[in-house]
Amino acid sequence: MVHFIVEAVEQLPLHGFQVNVRGTGSAQYPPTMMLSLLIYCYATGRMGSRQIEAATHTDVAVRYICGGDHHPDHDTICTFRRQNGPLFEESFVKVLAYAQELGVLKKRGGVSIDGTKIAANASKHSAVSYGRAGEMIEELEKEVQELMALAESADRAPETAQLEVPAELARRKDRQAKLEIAKREIESRFEERRKGRQAEYEAKRAARDTQRTQGERVRGREPQPPPSQPDGKAQYNFTDPESRIMKAGSGEHFEQAYNAQAAVDTEGSLLVLGVELTHAPNDKEQLVPTLQSVSPAVREVTEVLADSGYFSEAAVAKVESGGGPTVYAAVEKQGHHRSVSDLLEKADPPLPPENATWTEKMRQRLRTAAGKAKYALRKQTVEPVFGIIKSVMGFRQFLLRGHSKVSLEWTLVTLAYNFKRLFRLVRMTRSPNPGLSMALAS
Image (tube, rainbow, N blue to C red; front, side, top):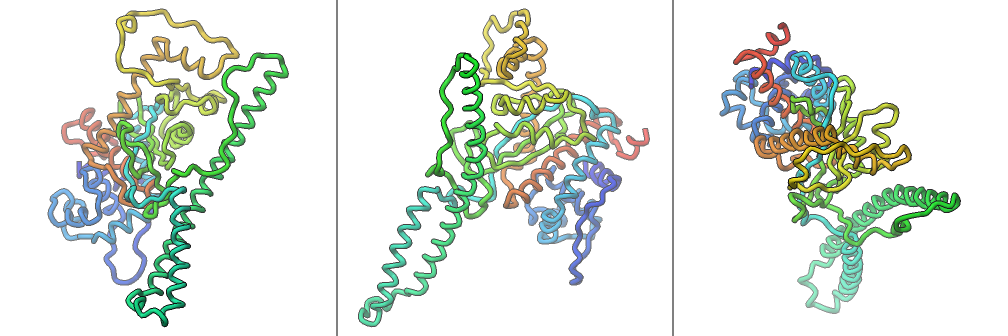
């Protein structure tokens, strides 16, 4: 695989490199070498910059990438990774274009969308809730007043001489300032979400009022306005403020994490065609942005597969508007058990009326034989990709912090996965020891 990665990177027409230009005499390394180094090490489960630095001395394949004599230090590796987000995005698209030239990726077809929670480089114990932040601010204000009183009476009370009042005051004021920042940030996030929910609430109210005016029967519960204050359990993390507390695994525990999204080819290659990263704990609003992350140069999307977590009438309507791809998304959770009646062939249910809701249309669509067959591809495509990334490549926690840097790292991880997968696909379709140039020439 190392020969394949080196040869492929050398042939990618890339332009977005950032190199060390400090002029301090630090070693300058070829950008293609640094990119190949990161891709190969991520693909083989070495993500830490110190691990990669050590591998340049001990691993034969890594030494081959570095020419044997070059040993970039961990700071150089980390800086190159941090500064080359546009390069990774450019490489992501270009390597998929090569996959098309190699005949292993179809220009037109479907994608399967899903997300997985990946731990942030921050502990959930470094977080504070909105309610607790308010309580701690009040406690600190009282302690500051007590310390100020002690400082005023210090000359008359020798027993306070052992207490470093200025240092204790500074410590509490610093903590109070950080808590104030946390509280304001939680309020800012809440207000941003509240505006969207208020608009949605008003639209629902208006629709129901229109139905009543027209004499139609209004069903369901009356919509409720969004709350005016943040939930007391809303969290802010001091180590990585842009990460969030999320349900992880089977939903039985919580961790500080990001929600990593991927759009995977359903036409047989299992290549990742688009990626998105969000700190939203659920997938309800991720269908459209994840689909939009698939470059038109990579895939003309005809079908989109997604589980019930992605379904909303607004999202499906937006995707399918203007002749867009057909969405196959479950409208409710589906059990894995199939009864005897499920195994028997049945006629497709009748088409819903023209004025049916998207929920009714989608439910009918997934009950047809064609819909069942297409939706079955979802877990056969995107879920194995996450399994390989987490269990084979060993990527379970981001090393960088902050949404923009973590998004960069997610692109790098999926780029490494695509190289790993593409090498395997070429081996299956070409000679036992394929060279990329020979494959392209053929």
